[in-house]
Image (tube, rainbow, N blue to C red; front, side):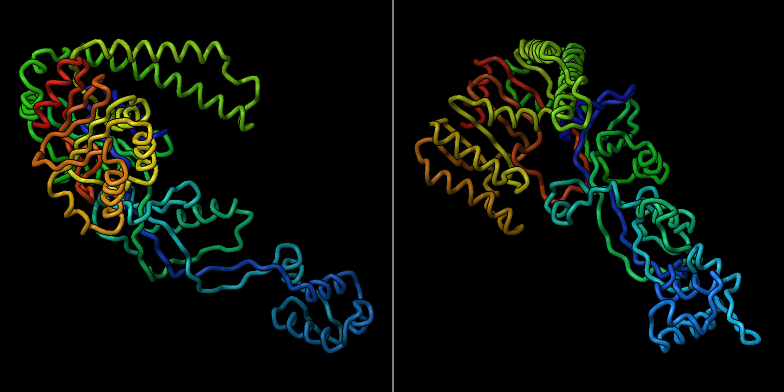
Length: 481
């Protein structure tokens, strides 16, 4: 599921409202830990052959001929076995010791010092395995493609934070089980090296009517209650700067006034909107679930008889379409934060004649090669495209090569399609819009194609969807005046 689909699925938390969500990076430390271990090894083949031959009753003098080996090789092997106390020699008789029989059965162990690679979670403060963890690249964090969740507490782990039994268990799981692990860890000495990395999750930030903040973490499409609980226990939800927000009344009234008096008077009642949006979410989840089952059956992950029927798919598609249609009947309605991504996808996929977007700047993870290719395809079809950026957007080139590529890509499209592709500058820094074919306009306090760079805080979202053609035309005329 995409992050916006996850936000839609888990938006309902009794007593709370969803303020914001983001694909997020949970902090991890990649540690190199010096440890004292006992390594279990199998016997070398020649030594094993010598031991088994002696155990079968062969005399030492007959071993070279029996094994077909040079006498010096057999003699060297015997000396090593005696030194390891696997073989004893007394009164001219060479025999296998009890330790030697145990080595034949189980292998033998030797103490050693080694470096163990360990991942330590900065939220739960526990050792974690690497098998199911998706690592986020540091560049994605720096460029704001994902929001950075701070470690709580912020200090890096020390050796006493590592529980030996947990380290042993996690390493065993990574190697396929205890029977596959060839070591027993006796002691963790010290952390020799630290490296900061990040784990990819989706974070949902909620607020209650009393102002209490709650953060949920969705890992592989499922809420991770342990991560959520530890984050709360360590003060993550009350950390200063986690959520940047103003009063609801201030935000909503400011955006309403930006819509214009006619549009503001015709906004759908909040309770009606919530009920309609819930209908859409339920229908959307049902259809997505059927689609996943259909794909799983095609790929052989589930039996063919579990493939959803054509009738089930048809009903689910029609139900979702009907739910969305009900939501479009209001002239103006509130917008949910996850609808920004949904509507941007719809806009570039469904537009027929004209597409208008305003933004603060251009983020490379939004205005990427796929997005630029789609705009090029639309321009070739003759779709009128207008993108308005804040006048400071050109300065964002200094953020790095990828930020510059986003702007250069749009400038190149404007050069190639002067009749259909228009880039404009604006002084607007607070409110932004997305509109296509005069069918719909999303107006929000969040840029449509950018963020502000590295994300350390979540922001309270406020937005409205205008669905009346006259109101859309009036708003766009005023916004572009």
